[in-house]
Image 1 (cartoon, rainbow, N blue to C red):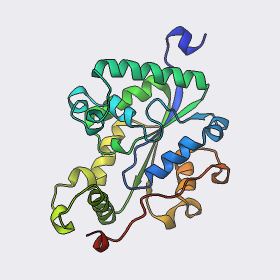
Image 2 (cartoon, rainbow, N blue to C red; image 1 turned 180 degrees about the vertical axis):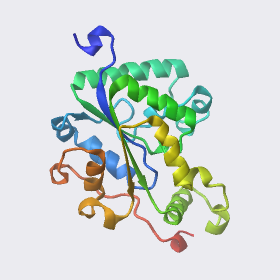
Image 3 (tube, rainbow, N blue to C red; image 1 turned 120 degrees about the vertical axis):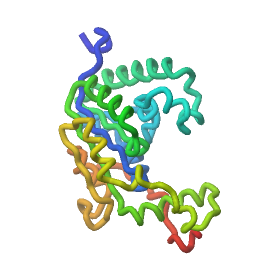
Image 4 (cartoon, helix red, strand yellow; image 1 turned 45 degrees about the vertical axis):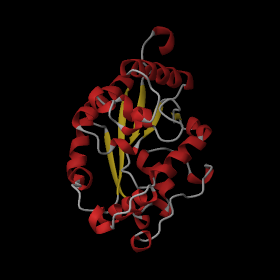
Length: 240
């Protein structure tokens, strides 16, 4: 009997990409979304249940209720009551995985990088329920470079403070990378892959090739449909 028929959850390996943000996550997510056949040939699924590109609903599903109802992604969506959302999400995800026949599933949500301990524990329960091995993939960008990129983004959204003023915030939860990685060790992944977001260090000088290598996905970049790069950056002075 299939998992769907028996009521059991599908047993699959999990590749979990948690960002961090501003490290080409949108490019990675678009490539994964646009190449289902190539992933399927490798025995993998990039599910649509959590989101068509970024898996925003996965990040919501694993958050405790008090964090969930105040989260920006929850407030801008129409998800109804948290318990009902969780039941529906789990049912749809299990059904999609089972119907795919995949041996592994790839998730990607950069919002998870800064998750708290309770969210990480809930994520661990999800990966254990899926039953297979877990591979955690993280990209880290040099902190000063990341801060400037983040400033560029908030200016596009309407920020008018100069960089020197805006930057005077408490960034420990974001830029203490040792603290963040230590927290995510609580997931107890079978493999924990951390890469620097630096072009010269990437496989073939390509983010896509590097991610495929980091995630252990046996697909050649040349066989994939690509997208044009977005979020091209001006320098900090030009933005300011």
